[in-house]
Image (tube, rainbow over all chains, first blue to last red; front, side):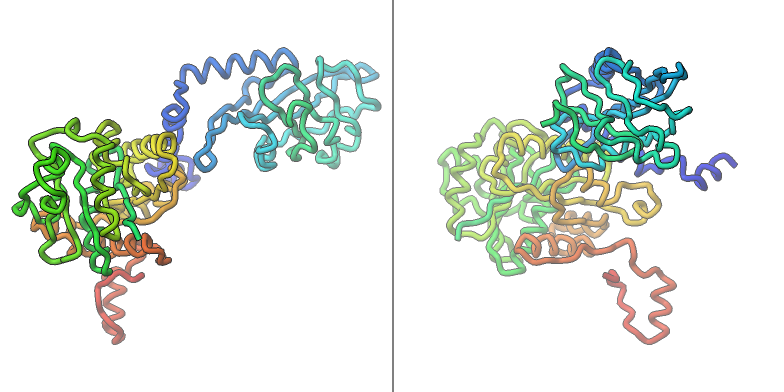
Length: 187
Length: 271
């Protein structure tokens, strides 16, 4: 019964799919000479840096290597979560996703940013003004009041997360929209 | 025009380099090209036996390189295909008997007089491979649709890209079993191409007649596989040949219906 359901829902990978996934994984190490252990350490260190500037949804962090043609990329999806008070002192959740790659974002196709899980929760309650008390460099969404109906309108430009000192370029999206003109570090 | 020098390599052993070299040589010769097949597997030679020429060897590549004979004396003409030649490897020496520079020199001497020089590389990434790849303009990377050979093929492609950037690489996926691919048990050609990301030039199905051809020393007589080898030869020549779809051949009942309805009842692949 179990395996019937698995086949029906397509959850269990076929041998060919296993082979493909395992190969892709192992080839990353083969090609870049980064061991899985080193990759884990690198992930921890990268997250430490990000944590200095914004709050992270730890359980939803995803980092992996990707291959496009014969180039290899490190791709990370790091959902941020920042609870900040509005004028009335209510906590508003601002959610954005940071996506970055190991090449300058000029090369990063918009599809990469869109692959980030769209985190388009409408803030509740809608803030009257944009609260300034944000973590060091993150800017808050401007017209977030409209975002209940149309999350995709929750300010594109002002959603940029700028992290100074980051060795790689960053682009940020909110609600799954591709970045407008990325961060200052990008080009 | 000087010969195109193509090294057939894989990293992994046993994936079908020698078979491909032998049969590709035949296919090109059948198209009217003049071909020299060079066995670069010093110490473990097999191109001679697969080509059915093991009894005709007098001199070998090492004899040439060490000056004991002229190049032409070591070349063996194929009994059935007069424009196909074999330059055999030595059997009682090893890879250290030959250097990449010497290999380049030998091939340079052949280039003006033939259309193709095919070099059968040994497995591995060491001296034997380096000897075989040194004179090449192009490389055929042979892999099977299974994890270890794809992994090794990736390494080889990486090595070639890093060190011999001028070499054009093409992928040959060998020993495909379409039924297993259909059932999701074997990597598909698309899977392999996606992982390796080099240009595909041939998909060769698993074919028992290849074993038989090797046993009898008659390259070029294998069935479905030979069709695929011939297509590779055509593509090398610049022809656009669609890849055969072995997975969708008519089965017994479909063929029976075809027979009863009066259309041709040949059992050739449907593509």
